[in-house]
Image 1: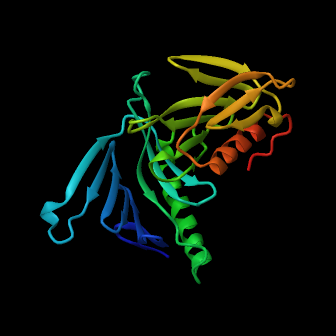
Image 2: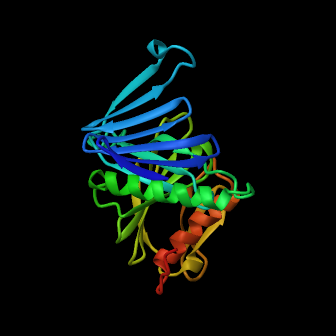
Amino acid sequence: MAYRDDAGERLEAPTAEGPLRAELSARGVKLALGSRTLIIADRIATLIEHHRKHASKDKRQSIELPGIVVVARDVPHEDLGIWIEIDPGDPARCGMRRIFGVEPSSLLEPDGLVALAALDRLAQRVRTELAPRAGDIRKAIEIGRGLDKVLVADHGDRYVVYARRLFRDRARFAMAIHTDGRVVVTEGKTTKEITVRSQHGVTVWGDYVRFADPHGTDLAKVAIPWIAPEDRRELARRIGQLVDRNPAIG
C-alpha cells in the first residue's frame, strides 16, 4: 500500500514481524517496524529502539555516513536489508554493516504472495530514493541468515563480496570477481589475483569457495563461514555465472 501527503510518500508492507512502514520525503528516508525505527537524513543514520511504554526511554544511536548506503535483497529468502559503509578511508577497518533488516511474511500464509509483492514495491522505492548514496553499486544482494549474511555488491563490471569475520561487527572485503575472469582474493593481510574463465572452476569445498584451473588445480580458496551450505553454493553459482564465457546473471 502506498499513499502521498504533504510530508511525502508513505508505503506499507506486511512482514514476518508486522507492518513495515516507509516514509520518503525531501528530508530523507524513515523505516519503522515494531519497536525499531531507522531514519536516514543528510549524512546521519539514526537507529531507535522504542521503549514499550515511555518514549523518553527510547534508545537512540546516531551513525555518521561517510560512505555508501545500499538496499539489499536476500537470495532466496527475500529479506530486505540496509547496509552502510564503515570507515571507508581506513583500509584496515573499512567494511559494510547491516543496520536494519526485515524478513518477509511466509509464503505459506494465505496472503503471502500479496505481502511479498507489497514488500517488493516498498523495497524498490526505498532503493530508488537511496540510489544517490550507493556510489557505482547497481544492485546488492545478501546471502545467509541473521547477523552472518554475506553481501554481494554488483558494480556492473565486477562483484565485490563482503563477509563477516569472527567477533567483528562488520562484513569485510572477501573477494572481487570481474567479468573478464579476474578474481582478487584476500590471503591474510595481502591480496592475490587469479583468473578463472569458466563456472566449472568455481566450486564449494567445506566452508570455502574454491577456484581452480581447467585441470582442477587449486588457484585460491576463500573462507565464507557462518552461512548454510546451500547459501554458500548459491554464492558460488552466482560467481560462476559472472566469470563464465557466456554469463547469465540471475
